[in-house]
Length: 254
Image (cartoon, rainbow, N blue to C red; front, side):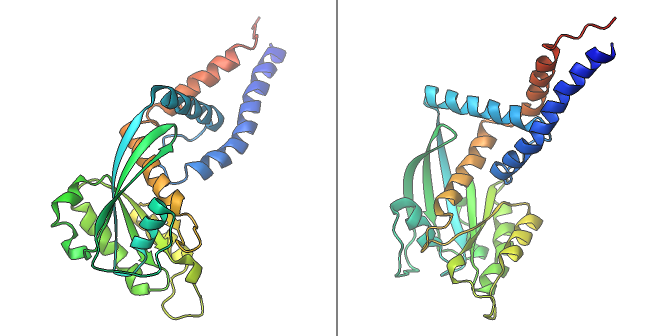
């Protein structure tokens, strides 16, 4: 009996040791997601890759409406144009507001993203009817301009009045950060603010192409996870798979 129990214990131990590695992989890839996964990381990750393959086979599609908001001259347009056209815009025109479109893929799903590059201030945000139709908001600030950083909370409050929306706090112009300059915002300050608001955080530089693609992909991945409920019951399914794998080991108790 002791030997048979030892076989089972070793099998569970192999899963636990594997999860120490896979938990790091999982937390890195899904650190911005609210998932119900607390263990069985390897099995859950494998299941998501299976889902991704199925998405490609079935040609699954997702429309995402996204608005980029923030104070004037924080880098919103540069971020959008870099993502859409892979160009860095040197000249800023605060009077232009437009929709941009791009088709790309996340998790095997074809995403058609409509990006609204806004010019409105925080107080007028909620008065615009189209804002209530947005799936996600990128709340941007300039890390060299503390005043724009302090406005993030106000934008967040206005967006909350539009309904339950996905929000990402985006630090722009990270290549210009100089800690010796008065008014500069550290990356840690940005992360802490995002955490207090319950939002993901990402630091970007449109000029240096740092995280510009990742910012919009992250937004699409979050919307995909919510709309298709990919994390629902994932932990329970993984636990069943684990138990089935263990039961395959012969365990005859006498």
